Image (cartoon, rainbow, N blue to C red; front, side):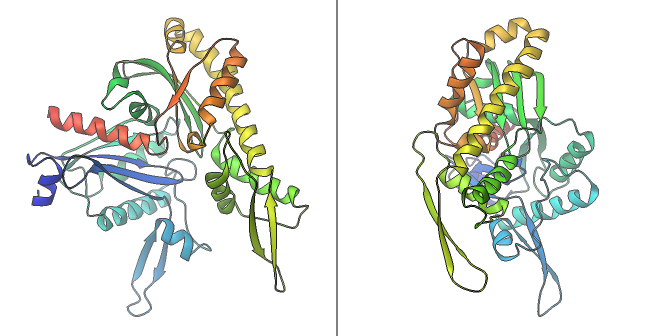
Length: 354
C-alpha cells in the first residue's frame, strides 16, 4: 500500500474501504479522503465512447459526462436495464470501470462492497460480479449487498443502525421500481417491476413537451432527464423557459408549465399503486409479523427519483390515503448517493473486523 493509501485508511496500513454502485444512469464510488475523516465521492454518468487518436491511431476511451457531451451520436449506456446483460456489455462495463479507477487513482489494496439491484437476472448479476471482482481494486475483499439495504443505511443514522432494524425500503431507480422488507439485514419478499421507472418518466416528459408546445418542440430523453433533475419539485415547481434552434435559422423560446410535473405525478401514483396493491399484500401474506412491524417504522426511499424535492412527503401522503392508515416515509439527504455511502460503511466495518 502506498503512503497515500495508508493515510486514507487512517494511517493504520489497513485496506481502504470502498463502496461502489454501478448504476444504469450514474456510477458512484465512495472511499475515505486523504485524511481518512470524510468520504470522497466520485460520481459520473455510466456511459462511454471510444474514438481513434488522430496521431497514433490508438483507440481511446472517454466516459461519463465528457463522453455524453462530446460524442452524443455514439455514446453507449452499458447498463440501461440495470445490469450488463451480455458479454459485449460486460466488456464495455469493464473498460468503463477500469478507466474510472485509473482516472481517480483508486487503491488496489482495498476492500470493496458493491450494491446490487434486486433483479431476477442471473446472467446479468454474474456479469456485474465479474466486472467488480476482476477489476484492479478490491484485492483484499469484494462483497455485495442489496442496493436497497445499502441505500437505507444513511437514512437511519451515521453508522449501520439499519442493519438492526425491521423496515421497508423502496428503490425508485431509473430502470426498475424495487421494494423489500428487511429484518435485521435479511432481505424479505423482494419485489421488482420495470413498469414504473425513472427512464419512463423521461420518455413521458419528452412526449408531454411535444404536446404542450403543440408539436413545435421535440426533445430527446437526455434533455428530458435534465429537465426532470433540474426542475421537478413537488413543493415549489415553477414554469421554466428554454430555447431551441429552428431548422433554417433562428431560435424558438418556449415555456414548460405542465409537462415535467404531469410526468412525475403519474410516476408517483403508479409507484404507490404497485406498492399498495402488489408488494405489500405479498409481504403480508408471507411475513405478517414483519409486515405489521415494518409499517410502524418509516418507509425508506432511495434511488434517483427520490431526489425530487417534496417526493418523500407526497409519497407518505398518497400511501397513507391508499392504505387508510398513517405511514411515515424518510430518505437520506442524497438518495442517489446513499447506496454507495451505505456500501462504503459496510466495507469499513468488514475491513475493521478483518
